[in-house]
Image (cartoon, rainbow, N blue to C red; front, top):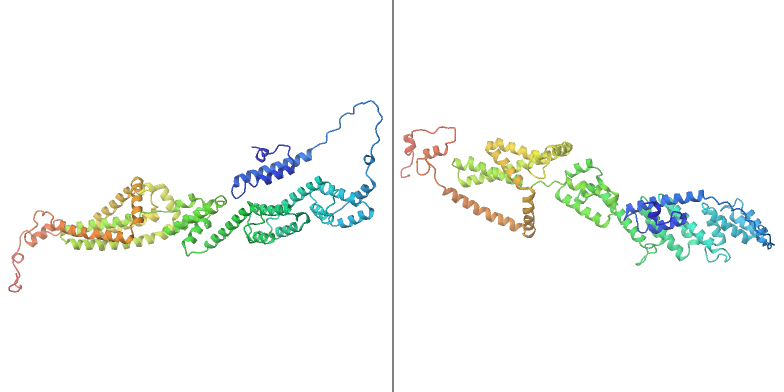
Length: 554
């Protein structure tokens, strides 16, 4: 689309029409709500303005057509005005030579002395219209001759006065836009415009408030100090429900002010380290690149990630313009950094490993059931403490070698673990493997096989299909059932299971060489897998009671 199609103007439109259409379309394409539309509108406006200026410079006056021979007839006498300027006009032209805003008062007094004040005022009005860049001269003329006020002379051409008003408005808007970066200059210019005689009417005041609001909204950098000063000067924050600043500009100014306050608050939180809110502020507003976000994410807890989600929802609902201004707020930049390792995988693997070791290395070798259960629980607690220590030791290492961790995860992650999504090798997998090595040293190949087999089974069960079915059920149970009831239910099931296990262990079928037999024989039957040999014959001391046994004691 061409610039004229975007603006909705013909290709021969003048500069004034372009500026008016741009001001009208700016209400629909605000920079905070539609930044792309505003950018297209701004580019089209600049192109159309440049084209209009070029047309005015290249405009050539058409040569007069060839004279047509007409029969001679007596021509009526020409009026005196067509014969040349009047003496008053010639004197007014002399008074206008090298006129400036500084010497306007002297030239006006000189014109009054010569008796050509009216001609001087008309000529001065035409000079102000032709000299587009002499804003100070027009302001000085308005101050001395009361143009555009109720006290102006009635014989002045109204069309020329309205053209002068439009020119002054365009120049004032350009000066306001140029002074947005300088707070002091903008305030001074706003005070000058507020004190200008041609801006004392109700409509002019409304235009001034609108122009100030648009200039503040188009400023590349927001200044809360400048906004408060303009509000105090123009009375925008006066008591009551109505503000002199017109809508929708006033609502947009308040929204940008609140957004600036919000950004200041987040900037203050990035310097703190005492809460989840400060952690979230550093992740979304403090960390601008991946090199800063990844080490920061390694220190995050679940509460910190929930604070990030809450902060993003606040930005999305209240300050959506920040999503275009700050690309690092996009969820794709920080949500993938949240790791959700399974909470119960390693504890269940430890418990199952301890149970296997108690069954095969204690109870099957003649230990009692309750002793084996107690040893199982104590062993599981000890392995849990060791696992916690290994995890705590691997976290600082993962923060140092996070680049290597990312490379290993990207290249070998699918081969190192069956769990999906794949864990980080150093941060989430190293301490699990070290724990398996410790279990191998303590329980041999049996303990290591039980440990890694349990992890593999749990990893397979963590697949997408199984987790999608079980996760909603578990979440509903956790939300609806209180925690103390869940603990009581678990203990209520655990105790009967222990009693049932004891009964089943006591009533298990006997194997060969078990049951009612000499104790050494039972010992030999229980020690079939041991290295020490079983005696082939029993001695008398093994069959009979020792002589030191007290009389009467069986």
